Image 1 (tube, rainbow, N blue to C red):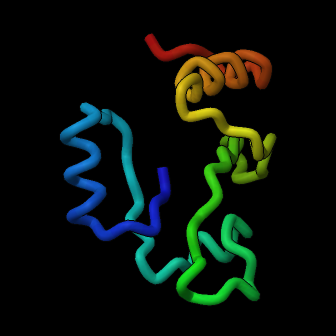
Image 2 (image 1 turned 60 degrees about the vertical axis):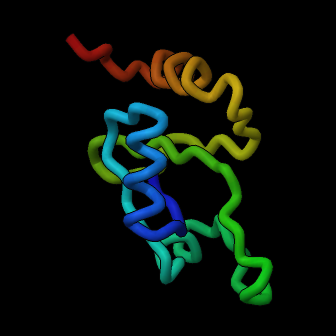
Length: 91
Protein backbone atom coordinates (compact mmCIF):
# COMPACT_ATOMS: atom_id res chain seq x y z
CA UNK A 1 0.00 0.00 0.00
CA UNK A 2 1.18 3.50 -0.76
CA UNK A 3 -0.23 6.46 1.11
CA UNK A 4 0.50 10.16 0.90
CA UNK A 5 0.06 10.30 4.68
CA UNK A 6 2.94 10.57 7.13
CA UNK A 7 4.63 7.48 8.58
CA UNK A 8 3.00 8.28 11.92
CA UNK A 9 -0.48 8.40 10.37
CA UNK A 10 0.15 5.16 8.50
CA UNK A 11 1.37 3.43 11.66
CA UNK A 12 -1.79 4.51 13.48
CA UNK A 13 -3.89 3.22 10.56
CA UNK A 14 -2.04 -0.12 10.54
CA UNK A 15 -2.52 -0.58 14.27
CA UNK A 16 -6.21 0.36 14.13
CA UNK A 17 -6.96 -1.89 11.14
CA UNK A 18 -4.57 -4.73 12.13
CA UNK A 19 -2.85 -4.39 8.77
CA UNK A 20 -0.33 -7.13 8.09
CA UNK A 21 1.11 -5.78 4.85
CA UNK A 22 3.83 -3.26 4.04
CA UNK A 23 2.98 0.41 3.59
CA UNK A 24 4.99 3.12 1.90
CA UNK A 25 4.54 6.58 3.31
CA UNK A 26 4.74 9.07 0.45
CA UNK A 27 4.03 12.50 1.95
CA UNK A 28 6.04 14.25 -0.80
CA UNK A 29 3.67 12.55 -3.32
CA UNK A 30 6.44 11.67 -5.80
CA UNK A 31 5.28 8.06 -6.15
CA UNK A 32 1.62 9.13 -6.33
CA UNK A 33 2.44 11.46 -9.21
CA UNK A 34 4.55 8.77 -10.93
CA UNK A 35 1.61 6.34 -10.84
CA UNK A 36 -0.76 9.12 -11.91
CA UNK A 37 -3.10 8.76 -8.93
CA UNK A 38 -2.74 12.53 -8.58
CA UNK A 39 -2.99 14.58 -11.77
CA UNK A 40 0.13 16.71 -12.34
CA UNK A 41 -1.83 19.95 -12.72
CA UNK A 42 -3.80 19.52 -9.47
CA UNK A 43 -3.47 22.48 -7.08
CA UNK A 44 -1.66 21.49 -3.85
CA UNK A 45 -4.76 21.94 -1.70
CA UNK A 46 -6.60 19.33 -3.84
CA UNK A 47 -3.83 16.74 -4.15
CA UNK A 48 -5.59 13.65 -2.83
CA UNK A 49 -4.57 10.26 -4.16
CA UNK A 50 -7.21 8.26 -6.00
CA UNK A 51 -7.99 4.83 -4.55
CA UNK A 52 -6.57 2.75 -7.34
CA UNK A 53 -5.07 -0.73 -7.03
CA UNK A 54 -2.08 -1.62 -9.18
CA UNK A 55 -1.31 -5.30 -9.67
CA UNK A 56 2.38 -5.62 -10.50
CA UNK A 57 3.79 -8.94 -11.68
CA UNK A 58 7.12 -10.42 -10.54
CA UNK A 59 8.93 -8.83 -13.50
CA UNK A 60 7.74 -5.35 -12.48
CA UNK A 61 5.15 -5.07 -15.27
CA UNK A 62 1.76 -3.62 -14.39
CA UNK A 63 -0.66 -6.51 -14.94
CA UNK A 64 -3.86 -4.60 -14.15
CA UNK A 65 -5.06 -1.30 -12.70
CA UNK A 66 -8.34 -1.27 -10.80
CA UNK A 67 -9.67 2.29 -10.98
CA UNK A 68 -13.05 1.38 -9.42
CA UNK A 69 -11.93 0.35 -5.92
CA UNK A 70 -14.77 -0.10 -3.44
CA UNK A 71 -13.35 0.12 0.11
CA UNK A 72 -16.13 -2.06 1.56
CA UNK A 73 -15.21 -5.01 -0.70
CA UNK A 74 -11.60 -4.26 -1.60
CA UNK A 75 -10.16 -7.25 0.26
CA UNK A 76 -12.41 -9.73 -1.53
CA UNK A 77 -11.92 -7.89 -4.82
CA UNK A 78 -8.13 -8.16 -4.53
CA UNK A 79 -8.35 -11.90 -3.81
CA UNK A 80 -10.63 -12.39 -6.83
CA UNK A 81 -8.36 -10.38 -9.15
CA UNK A 82 -5.26 -12.24 -7.96
CA UNK A 83 -7.06 -15.47 -8.86
CA UNK A 84 -7.91 -14.10 -12.32
CA UNK A 85 -4.23 -13.19 -12.76
CA UNK A 86 -3.24 -16.74 -11.76
CA UNK A 87 -1.25 -15.60 -8.73
CA UNK A 88 -0.61 -18.63 -6.50
CA UNK A 89 -2.24 -18.56 -3.07
CA UNK A 90 -0.02 -18.22 -0.01
CA UNK A 91 0.48 -21.33 2.05
